[in-house]
Image (cartoon, rainbow, N blue to C red):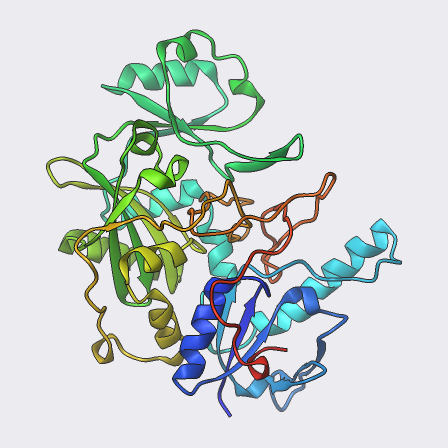
Amino acid sequence: MPTVLVIAARDDWPTDRVVKALTDGGAEVFRMDTAEFPQEVTLAGRIDARRGWSGGLTTAHRAVSLADVSAVYYRAPNPFSLPATMSKPEHRFAAAQARAGLGGIITALDCRWVSHPAAMSRAEYKPLQLATARTCGLTVPPTLITNSRDAVRAFVGDVTGPIVCKPVATPVFIEDDQFKAVYTRRVTEDDLADLRGIDTTAHLFQAWVDKAYEVRLTVVGDRLFAAEVHAGSDAAHTDWRSDYRSLTYRIGTAPPNVVEGVRRYMDRLDLRFAAFDFVVSPDGVWTYLEANPCGQWDWIEHATGLPIAQAIADELQGVSDERRSPRPGPPLHDGPRRRTHSGRRHPHPPLGRSVRECPPPCVRPPVVRAGDQRQRHHRLARAPRHHRRGRPRRRLPRPDPRDRP
């Protein structure tokens, strides 16, 4: 029977929403987390001259044949769980074998992907994102990536107006047992007078784009869900991730030239899902900032009513856009009013070691233990380092146990 293989962290409740949408529509789902391999999930795959990969995945409760996998939803699984008795060299070796074995067979499946880990891995690099956006006809701001003080000064001289500095990769880190984030910030005259530290690593500088509001454009297959993000504080006006409490949302519509550019972008990078960020100027010009191939969408659905989970389920089943259309949402919706927190486990973009988004307030953070340096990877393609804390509280009923190992 055709089965949707869902590979995601056990505690990822946005994925729970997708699984529920799939099962409510009658789809067969096999859910697993790469943390369950090899101790809870058994893999048996065979190939020979007569046929391609055959075999399957088995747990204590369920099994799925590789031949039955019609689609794969891949989102932020946990690291492989290997025996604690292994030495560190043994652990590294075994993890590499698991990635190449389990990951190699699954990524070889000829089926529908949302999205393929190799495509996500490549699409994570911000320099490639900007180059692709420009090639596809989207407006991008003047940008410099450098570790040279002289290059920064030259860039400032060439750009008329303010500039900002932002991380090239992940803005989140753990310091003194505290979850911290580096947000976009305007570069001041004092900063330019003292550029010590620029030579220590790569920095991204960008021309400031005057904005009326920003847009989170969530793309699922051929469907685009535009949510205007209106900042209610000075901090949020510079980087809306820094002050979620002040945000309000409005369902929007992308102009035709942006729609065409985004679709070309998705095709060029072979993505079926991405979360785009745009700045919209007071005169209505849309400027591309970035696109996260594994970006957050759960809080946007909560805030606006846009049916993103259902769209992902439809894409996995090959349901055409004509058969569904976004239900209307409120014209203006304040951000979620549930209890807020300072951080949470983030979704994992693949290779670039980048988690560019900070958590929306509707998401509960975990608690980090001192010395917890575990990695959370896109297990089927090398991925970003991540520090995980605890287990978040679920907001939805758990799916039927038969739908996951």
